Image (cartoon, rainbow, N blue to C red; front, side, top):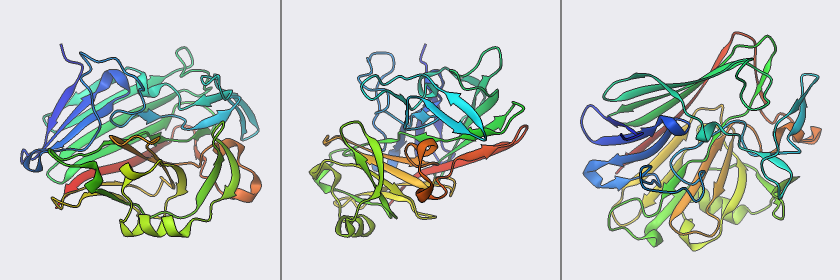
Length: 311
């Protein structure tokens, strides 16, 4: 029995596959008229993952690296498990591989849920919470809504991201050399690439930032691992310059940062919307507000992303 749920848009143009057994991952999004498969995918019945973060839209909670897994928030000490021994960091959490309950499913929508309680906590995260992921597949693409409810008695620090991994090329018969990226960015942040820690300095590369904004970057032609602030309303656009089709990825303004990564590979590109800056719990005062979102007890916060195909 397949672990995937297949959604179809009312007009039949889009098809999506959701994997509740691994973090309610949107593992595939197809636009049938253009023969576009936007996301890097795999067959979960006949495949061994080489890297669980490089397929579909893995949910990162909390995202990025936290040195030693420890930080302070609202006067309280937090200690998350170190799961990256080479850097001594907590990395990305485990919700991306955690089974979610399917609460409701229709032909074009599905609602999945994960509940952490005091008796069954999420890792060593000291808050009870409910996290739902809802997908709505419409005639204009797929909308993903994540809702986090604080079921604990104390204010809950939240950082959220998706390790969204696009297939290159995404169109049948396409060539990676014809895929260009448009990505409006703000500041670029420097990292020590030996252990990926933040230096808390900015990168002056106006020429590259301008090329990104103007859609003149071919991802397959270069190694990319960069971290940016995200201007309000900014969206990613990957365009096949031969067919004229684009995959567009947008997010609400809770997502104030982008991580862009291909690791020198030519067959995929990760463009990750993130609510907080990398290593946010350890950011120095000079960085200002790094968007550690606090959810009060009993309150819910929603986060929305949208993906679509345009000609």
